[in-house]
Every structure is written in structure tokens, then in C-alpha cells.
Image (cartoon, rainbow, N blue to C red; front, side):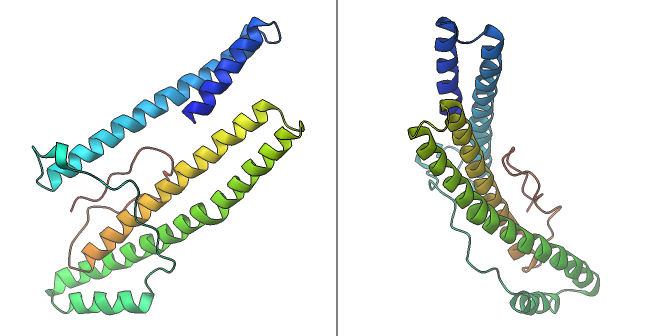
Length: 211
């Protein structure tokens, strides 16, 4: 998105120079480029903070230079865990808990399962129909641009749209794995303070439940 915004800004500046655009028209493009630049810096800072927190949580403080994270999150499983399998595991752990804890775990497990299934469905939709449709639109926009049926502005707008769809898909993928982790913890008798919010795709990283 930053690259597309910068390309739009450079083009707009050239159009002002040759007299095809006014400074008012350019100002909108300048604002878009500034917003993209700020969002990139926020994302970089959030990534650094998240990695520092992970290093601390894993007891790797002082070893950051040798601490390497994978480039991508694991793929979303094609099928979510079934209710029957999850219920069997939930019953097994509850049989090992005292009365009050068993009741509390039952409520937590019910909530964790609902978030898990919702997160799985959202991740599949965002990485499936939504992202594939956006990729198709981008490809068609390029073809129309090459055929002089779309302007360079249409193409740059679509590049930004596809980039945002990718960001949203990654966010949904991240949310699924947080929901899956919370569920696994509950099925071991744990008690998360809260479950991941599923409404913030594309924004700042959600705060995982305190484990």
C-alpha cells in the first residue's frame, strides 16, 4: 500500500508540474501517502513490540539476535475441529476438576468453541472468496489498463484494495490461531481472561488472553 501511495504521489506531482492538476487535487494524494506512511510505521512498531513480548514470555531475553520467527503463520486447517471431538475433550478435563471449577470450565469451553468456529469461518472467507475475488478484480483491472480502458488511478486504487484485502486475510489468520490457542488452553483446564476479538482485521494486533 505504501508503494502504491508513493507511486500515486509521484504521478500527481508530475501532473501538477505540467499543469494537468491543481494543488488541491494533489493534496488528496499527499494525504493518502502520509496515511500509508504512518500506517507502515505503526505496523513496524507493533511488530517490534509483539516480538519483544514474545521473547520475554519465552524466557529468551538477551538472546534476541538469535531468535528467528517464521516468515508466515501456519495455514488455516481446511476443516475446523468438530463439536463431538471438542466436547469429548472438554468432558475429559471436567471430570478431573472440582465442582466449581468444572462449572466454570464448562462455560469457558462453550465460549472458546464458539470463538474458535467463528474465527475459522472468517479466516476461510477472507483467504478464500474475498481474497480470490480481489485478486481477480486486480488482474482484470491490469488488463483493462493495458487496453487503455482503465486509468492509472484505477489501477493504483485496485492495488491498494488488494493490499488491504491481504492485510485483512492475515489478520483473520492470526485471530484464528489465537482463538485456537485459547481453546486448547481451556481444554487443559486453563482460564483465559478474555477471548480474541474478531472484529479488528487489518487493525492493530489484538491482545491475546493472559495465559
